[in-house]
Length: 458
Length: 158
Image (cartoon, rainbow over all chains, first blue to last red; front, side, top):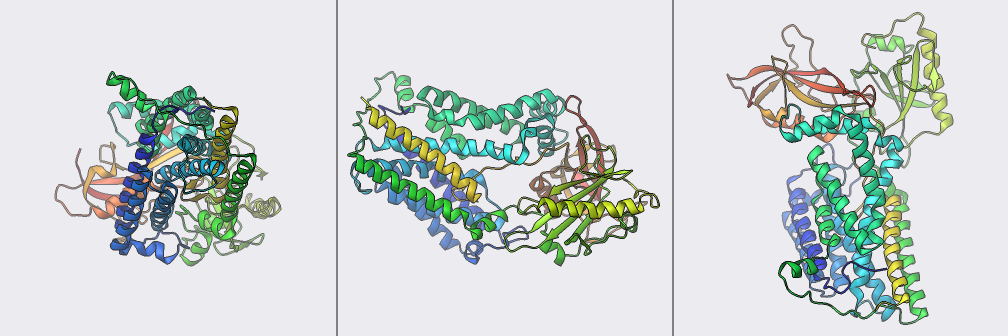
């Protein structure tokens, strides 16, 4: 496999990661300092993460460690140890920020991820040649570059995969992107950007094209690894994706953008051409394994490291913690404590007397909302059950028959019943329990629909 | 000159870096520096919405275009002339399973109102609404309607 920087100094890559990481450390420390614990803060966050907000000296110290680590990394002074130190310090700042605001700000993740990939490649090169992680190996940064680009590509493929897993192929239909654009873009914006957003909102074909393009760019990011030429071409596509996201949604991930610019083009060669001088070639001895045994030993160590990280990530306590990110709405357990507005008498009568706090098929009714002001004029019944690891939540939606253009899993003479999940932090019930709950609500509606009119607004 | 062995080692490192980040992130979700980057990856939507200001001429404005806000929110629980009591200022107002909104956008709007209070003789009566776009199908432009959030008085900058 060829690397884009073969024959060139990789110092710009190291220095670029160092600058981006150091800036992130300053910005994260500042944001933690100005964010007090609030109602969005992570409910299970360790106290020390939440308390950093009140400890500016400790924050400054952690940011200082991160910056010192990145400076040493950029200067190749014990790069593995200093790089790991920098990432750990950034991780503390990032997790503190995520704990305070209720979830991660993912723009900060890219530099940590790509630096991790660089360190992985560097350690691998040293492992297969000398077996000593402290000893610099000629040509080692070639593998570091490829490790960094491998992880960078994985961040985009991961994002595309999330879209398919959470949104399905329907993610690329016209309405999904249009919904995001109108919800994000200012109203009454008569600038050229406003007209651009209006064009996407009003023309489904344009929205479909952009949705598909986003998915192709993200899922195809493995092209960054195929050859130097595809790396540059795909970088241009990635930059186009980021710029379009900025124009349409006013969202930019500066770190990802900067890293794409940094790793996607042969800057030493470009600068030499601009200065009309001969590019300085760097002769790199190959980083071939010293022996088959060294190759096996290094591969085994790498696999053990990956398995250990995956094992740590699979721990229930970790998964439960990450599942609580960005749970902006009260969870069923919160709703049990916070007084939920009761449904109107009309809605209760329509649902056969069902009220918040009642039990349906073993679930507790945590809220009854609606009829909603949307086109469905739906009534949402949220059912919850507290579990050890995360809450099981089921939302049953009742609409007039035929309101939605797809088949309802349960129907009465006049109404359709649909089901949906709770927010991202909750788990789905089993299909048997879900069907039992749907049947229980359907039975109530069937019993009353000929005697009770639909609630006002439905 | 790069040997075949070196080439294979390079390919292996790139593949391991790619595969391990992807796999660990899928397992863990989001713990720095691992992430599945699930932004805007949610379920299929047929509506979009945001909280905005409607003035007396029915023109729409951003909340951030207003200064010196007073609203009949929870603090006053007021009853506007000829209107029903408004609910507390709520970033989730008028949302449900069929009305999509971007939470942080609406929270910022409500936070802006809360952090820019005031009483100004130039203030005009406005209605805080959730402006809802509905997309009946993929070909046609959206239809829109408004859902009442609160009655307010504010000085609009433009």
